[in-house]
Amino acid sequence: MNVLVSIAEFLVNEVLSVPAYLIGIITAIGLIALRKSAGQVAGGALKAVLGFLLIGAGATLVTASLTPLGVMIQGALGAQGVVPTNEAIAGIAQEQFGAQVAWLMILGFVVAIALARFTPLRYVFLTGHHLLFMATLITVVMASAGMPTVVVVVLGAVLLGILMVSLPAFSQPWTRRISGDDSIAIGHFGTAGYIAAGAVGRLVDPKGRSRSTEDLKVPESLRFLRDSMVATALSMVLMYLVVAVAYLLRAGQATAFDAFDGGATDVGNYLMQAVTQGLQFGIAVAVILFGVRTILGELVPAFQGIAAKVVPGAIPALDAPIVFPYAQNAVLIGFLSSFVGGLVGLLVLGVWLGPVLGLALILPGLVPHFFTGGAAGVYGNATGGRRGAVAGGFVNGLLVTFLPALLLKVLGSFGSANTTFGDTDFGWFGILIGYSARTGVLPGIILLAVVGAVILGGAILMQRRVVDAGWDPAPAREPVGAAAESGDGQGAPRRAVGAAYPRVAPPAGAPTPPPPPA
Image 1 (cartoon, rainbow, N blue to C red):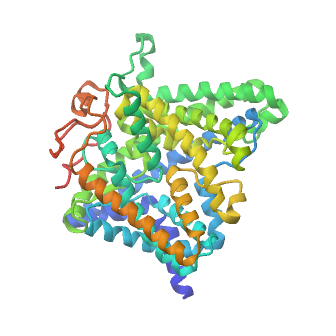
Image 2: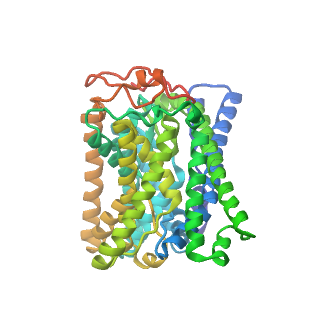
Image 3: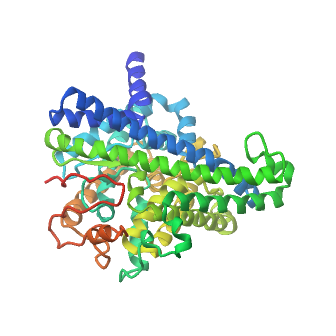
């Protein structure tokens, strides 16, 4: 038994939980199915791995550049609370539930592949680290409610597999409006925030009059701001300087200087370190975008082989940054709007919901607000242009503040760990299964099975009646084909219900995807 547990933990911790290796394996399988040569298989798989490692390197740079900013924001606000960090809470839980999480994740992946093969939900969820996080959440919530280990692993795996194929289906109409076809889907457990952003984008701009974030008109003297890397870096430099000054005035030099590793030597050095961190953020975003383009160039063609041999009509469900190249200005707008939403949510928790419901203060985490808020900005822009990007990011910020606060109630002893799961799907799903499991073992099993059946049934209905029918979430907006030619990248082409999506040009820098599967 110990050997089996060790093997399971190795597969989860060293292979399946590492997105780069998982993507490389999937790419290799697809290329083999296409009967490519050994050299092409090895080269394509390695390039896909390197693309994901580039994304990881960029994410590490983002985290490093945002850490001092988080310290200064917390100090400037004078608030203490919980900072949602998926990696932190998953690491804490591994000490107690490592074996259960390992088995649950492996079985969940098998369930997801089976569902993709035998249901209309042809999505293969490839964001390995999020699978680990969701497996950890399910384990913690069900075990804290008193569920037996066997039930936690088996039923939890079924629930995980259902989520892996269902959530991409629910978001696919909005994802397709961004990418222009069905070559990719979103495979990230912030899906509720992205759907909300797309819906709010349509709500704030029902007639499609708000122009795209990618078509911002600037004076000739500010033409350099059209470069997304320059605009991102400059915006973050300004944000860093404002927060740094506020923190300095509130906390004083002795404390403020320690916000940066090693501390600053004087006020000038302190401010210049803030400038440097803002520039580092711009570099980090550029690295992430390059990694996304690299991985798309290898993975999407390889999926033709998987679609034909393993899961007919398979669609890769990928991490949130996969949509960043389609509307790069919207990423920054969504991030900033999401962060503002987080601050507003913090204020509401502090003066109203916290005292009334006994909820903890959820401090805005810069990393989740960047990744989920940035993606929400892209989804909002696709349906509502600039208004949608702002409104969509703001709504996402509220969701990633209120949902983690409510989730703490069902995490048992982990609810006092000063950290929690941050993205929207961890929140609503954890709350749902948490209160279901607390009804007792037998009633809990029945309720959890019903929850899984409802989500799966709803996703199948969504796929057949909405996705396959070609529903456009923003029919008043300009088709992506024309948008791509004019350079504004607003979203997917409009089409008649039931018609096939035409081949369209992706945004500048994004690889041309293959035709959508039949």
